[in-house]
Length: 618
Image (cartoon, rainbow, N blue to C red; front, side, top):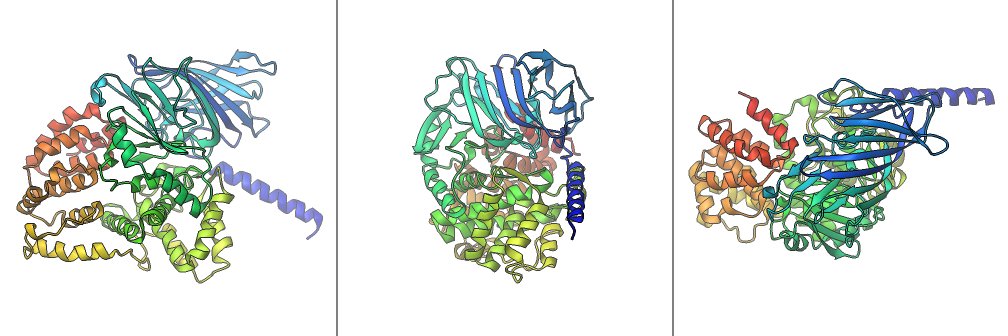
């Protein structure tokens, strides 16, 4: 090929890349990050608990990619913008015009900042609303002490725009700093370098030196104590919960070391955790340097620490290598579920890991009946133009992990482990797509080991419905033994008093309750409750599955503890299915609605939204 033709080919490739980038802009963001990208954010905010607002300014440092661009498009949701300033060449701040588009129910409002040049920094002065979708402001009564209020954020997926005006897309990564003013006596923590000895005098100050996507912006303010767990690990929690939290999370340092032995150095400095009040809507949020955790994982026996392994795993899959848009969600959660199992195996052994994995796979298979086939793929071939084309976000956890496990089983760990570590190393602090992973997969695994996976199998895993028939199911000897007892008990051949549960782990109880759901009678559920006090268990994963089975069986003697559970736990994974089950039976529907009317104010806005949808259905 001549030099001229080489230049032409290069030009065509560049144009194609630019065209692809333009077509692939995140449909859930108004940002034109093909023209300008945020490289850093500084927040100077004051928390007002009486008004339930954050107010101040956000300063964006900008990297202009298109030299002709003169517009900065940002994502906002229900923010009150007072003014916007741009910094000129002399370092002076000057007001610049801006407009806000009509509000979109899903995406919020586009903010357009009109500029006459390409300033390096823009400062937006604003105030949040009390109904900001990312923030929950708790009254003192909703905390453990009942004395002081509490506030926390949940920015994933696209809720950061409700408390900071920015380019709210995982395709844009930035460093950040902050100064937060809060009422005296309340500690502020963020997904940054928290100082356990800080006093907050002059404002609480933070710095996040590694670039993150906007959904990992996080803040919490409240009565919070800190406790060291190891040289680089610690836990924050309400004073009355700090001892229990520190005991439950004692193995965290071991988990970090185990993950590093598999996938390379931990690149975020410290790994701390914050145990939030019960209204936190999910199990955990992998905010870098400060994982947010539900208190429902504190069982008093360290039986639910797989949640910690999962959130820690995100330090490699998700936080370090991020899905470029939420269409590619499986690159985040599927990879993380796979890494979680490997961490658990490293620390607790193969049998514990297999029990977790078998339970995960069984629950994924049972979920297929309620998921439309088109939503069962890891990703669709549709253009990334709307969230309507996205697949089921829950199934992606187990199916994505199953796909990676299949590659591992066929290639062998001596081949697969370096392959996966290479993916993390070569794409660290980048946002990636499925297409990019497939290119890496073909070049670094399949071309060298073509027998690992055929193109037809790859197509089926990525774009097909369900779980491929060739997938090997995990098998735990302990869970296999449990099946015999379960079948005999359901048939009545084995009495409840004869169930040998003394050595059962939480996973065994969860499997047993999953398996008998919609099969056991109300009388059988009553016997279980009387024999094992399942309605009073402190293990919330076990309690949820027992309550679900009891509701489906029509066992109503559990209403008192069930109401207490629904009033004190705000995790969507638990409360949404329970309300859904209760509303199926006319005898339970009215009772459920009455409970929800009392409990609703205790839930996070995301949980309220999910349950409201259920309640609106006839």
